[in-house]
Every structure is written in C-alpha cells, then in structure tokens.
Image 1 (cartoon, helix red, strand yellow):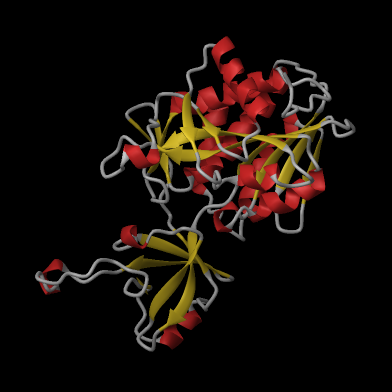
Image 2 (cartoon, helix red, strand yellow):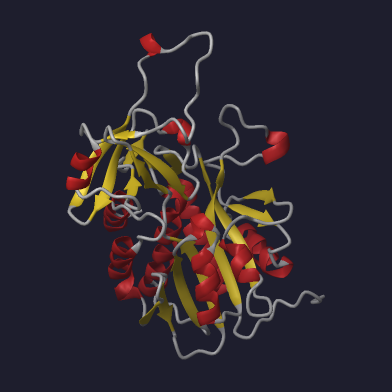
Length: 357
C-alpha cells in the first residue's frame, strides 16, 4: 500500500461519519475517487457513487458502506448530565470512561461517559453498564449550562479515537466497519485507472449510507442504479479472540485472507466466480456460512429490482463496534486484489443464470 493511499485512509477514518450525518466523509471519499471515475451519482440521503463507463447498459456495482455507529442525546437532567440512545449498534459496555464528541451547530462539545469509582460500588451486587445507567458529563452543573453549549436532544455523539498502526501491519480505529469497504473499493477504481483497464460494462463504485440501521442506503441506491451484478464488501468477525464460540460463529481470522460468504442472498455462480478468481490468482481466502441473511448490504442488492446477482467479500476484523476495531493490512490488500481480478473476469451481458450448467 503506497503512502498516498495510507494518508487518505487515515484522513478518512479520523473524520466522523455517523449514520445520517455522513456528508463530510462522503465529500472526502469523492474527492479521492474523482481522478479514477468518469462521473458521480449522489442521492437525497447521501449515498455516493463513482461511475466508470456511465453509458454502458450492463452495470456492475462494487459496494461498501460509509456510516459508523454513534449515539444521540436523548435526555438532559436538571443536574446537567446527558442520557443517550443508540444510533446503530453502539455498545453500552464499552462506553464508560470514554471521551466523546457531541456534534452541535456551534461545533464539537467534548464530554465523557462517567462511571462510579470502584471504591463506591457495592461489591456484592455490582451493576454492569447498561443503556439506562450510562451518561455523559460535559462539565456543567445544570441543564441550562448544557443548552448554552448548543447541546440539545437529537445531537449526535461520536468517539474521537483515531487511526493507528499496531505492530507494523494491523490497522486500528473506530469505524473500520465499514469505511474500510469504502477505502477498498476506491483503491480498486484507482488500480483500474493506473493499469489502463477498459471494462466492457459500467462500473458503479458505491459508498452507501445508513447500513448500520438496516441497509437503508443500499435499498435506495440500488433502485437508482438498477445493476445487473453487485459485489459487496463489509467486515466479519475474527472468531479467534476470547469469548467467541466457533461452533456458533464459525472460524475466520485476520491475516488469513478475504472471507467469501455462502448465504441465500449470495448468487451461487457469482460466488464461484470469486472463488475461482482467488484460486487462479493465488489469493488466500476463507469461507463463511450465513443462515438466513448476511446482515450486510448484500441482502438489499440481492432482493431488489426483481433480483440482482450479488456476492459478499468480507474483511475479517477484531473487536467489532468498539473504538479499537482491528484489521490486517495484507487482508485489506487481498480484498482489493480479489475485487479487481474478479471484475476482469466478468463478461458484458453475463446473467450468472442460476440454471447455468
């Protein structure tokens, strides 16, 4: 990974992009992608799409999602403490003692999730952090002081934790789920441009919003694009860390390559194209099975427009929905290569027929 790509990744990850408020991050992403595409599509809720060969009738999507989990201000007490509700799958158990940024019209207001000191807790009946007992302290003594800072019900709250590299090749930050996807599909577009590849179809590099609250951005943009094929990238769990049951979650591990999913929403022949591409190009990969749904934007694309041939390539990740999400650099590079090589194997007009011999 070259210096320019790494600098963009750090800048992109350090920017806050909470669900429903992705616009600043989307502008950063579009600015980076601009030299490698012919045109852009955006929609009313903020999904951004870079398009190569926009006049082509046959359309292929490669997709990630742009949003990160966050909190909303839900209630301000008379004493100036702030209670919250989730915006996406925010984890109450990691909140205590974390610094936060509250986004207001006046700018960022800093605060902390407080927690009672160990000395004051009942050791025989200690309470765990729960949504109804975690609260934010912004250093005020009453509700009026809080409101004078510009904080009100509905303000969105993010963590300020920033990108760093652990042990030379592990990327760590909040929001790797799934701005790594946005980064990887942008790198695919960059690689196509640098290698002067002329695709025989339209390529729609899609960074969807609002995945964390139900795949909503993908649901909207697939109706606009009306693609023939969709290759989605998201993250999945590294199940080798403590307290994860492999019999339930399967075995996937950072450093062992991209994860190719088996699921009803994953079109069999498109999945086999990904596997054959990986094997042909000596790209290490792992397999994962989903029961009813993938829980990713794959589901939204697959079941849209009368059915779209869709597949999922996942990036294994440790500590999902925390502020120290971790991925392996070589997995990131392998996902980029797998998507790139797979695009070279898609033929214009290929219907990936379910009944193909």
